[in-house]
Length: 132
Image (cartoon, rainbow, N blue to C red; front, side, top):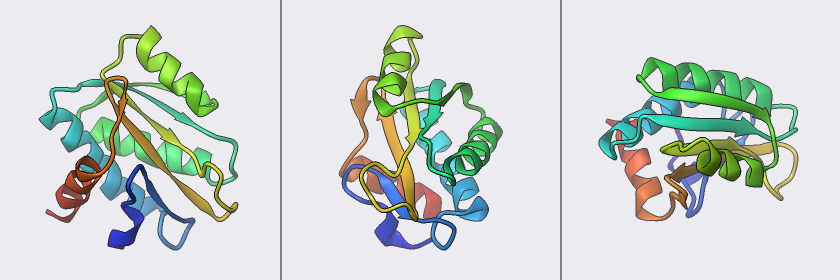
């Protein structure tokens, strides 16, 4: 997995060269471990309308569940609705699969712990877990 996909505020890369079934599985296990280490067990997962998002969501959900995370798939939603689901459903966090404002070949993962965005050093902790 290429280290440059771990950005300041998200994990983002080109589909399928950098984000594919294999890398998403590895990321899902790392994100699941990160959540467990933080005491988070229940999360929401959503995705945007990019063509690659349903596959990335499926692969992420499979690996999060494999890591023991209990989750609710909120489906294709805008990112603010994922944030709303975390609050409204009293979840421990959430992951939105979204390419945001980037060109269509990009996609990525915005990660929340509680109602706060995971960023900076915390994103790098997920990278370290994925490499171990």
